[in-house]
Image: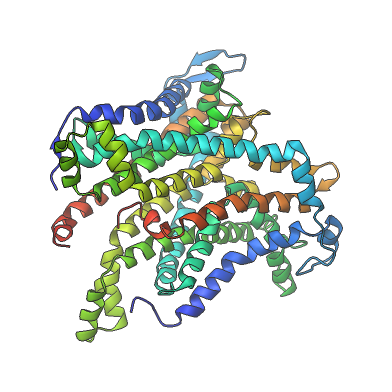
Length: 268
Length: 300
């Protein structure tokens, strides 16, 4: 009953709309540059793996993927670790300034990265973290930590309070209760929060590019190198683009059963 | 459910507070500092008071003109985005298959654009829209439509909007789908017994249940479109001319391009203030919606 007439057609059209540009990118990544520029072909007539080969063998290319994954993973771990206790506090207790604090956190999720690009550059240069994955991981905390708190708070609130009380009556200390009882109960929530931290850290470029130069340069910034004196290396650009889609696609596949609830931030 | 008052809870929030304060308050203080000064390079700064702010809010100056023009463009962009993505997202959510493997398949494909790095989204559309090597640009031109997003303002706008619809409608759809999933079957059965029309079911059952998630969707979409940077920057670079220069692009141009720190800082603060106000309005509406719903939640 919760569907509308012609739903199959609408869904099909929308999915085609989503997939068409991606198909074109994949298609281009298997073509030679000569074929890309000279003809308009719907599939590669002389398929080639040269672009992928170049990325996997040239260190300046594949190290970009490693750098990106480094700061994304660091950021996800930091965000979840600090957000868990806070989510519990916001969900269970009332304390001085709790509502203001929550709003302040939320407002940081909305802060434009462009505002912070330059001050972050100064800050991380001053403390010697510039051009390390730590700088980007910490910088991305500004929007990921509030988001993680927000999502986890929704999931913690879904756990009945009687469980806490019973555990404390049974003589569980707070840390032990947290690790042994609460965390397993909201495991799916942690998964969802981690997914979102991964997602927003993975897709962000402005801060990641501003805070790195050589040692920690993310793949997204390296991609801009395909413009050279000989013109645009379209095939290589397309191949690099396809490879950035794959980690996201893998992560989605693992959390597909929680996606819907996750996107409602644990609040449905 | 009443929460107990416990000031010790602050210890649990302290790590979050420390991390976010480190990356929010410290840099913001630098911005405030810069916004009151002028620099001629060499790290020499001169006190400028509220001069930059005066200039910023005065459309007759260069800075003010650029700010207000980009603010206008950005508000128009956000309005168009919301007007397209919210209804389309609801329709897509209502069109989701009910069960079976196709549900998972649809969810994964829907979520796919959300996980693509923003500059790659830009790259995809930059390529897709090019008249010489892109499928969309080629087909449009073959159909006799003179489409070129590099030289034509309207084409550039259409490209940026279609790109954003491609990129983010799924978020609205997934949120609405989550809202729809939470409606118990009994509601629909009751509606069927009452002989409610399709439209009545939507108005009386589905829309109210999606209320809260829709609010989140509108908030996230407004905020993210209001600070959009990477995608239009990659596709159009803010051009042709300045026609797709949104506030963030203008800001980065001033701060990192011209190194006009004072102007950039003043712009940042005003920009942040606008976002803070909008955020506060949404937050108030959202928490009010939450308290009104409380009795229902208890019953369910």
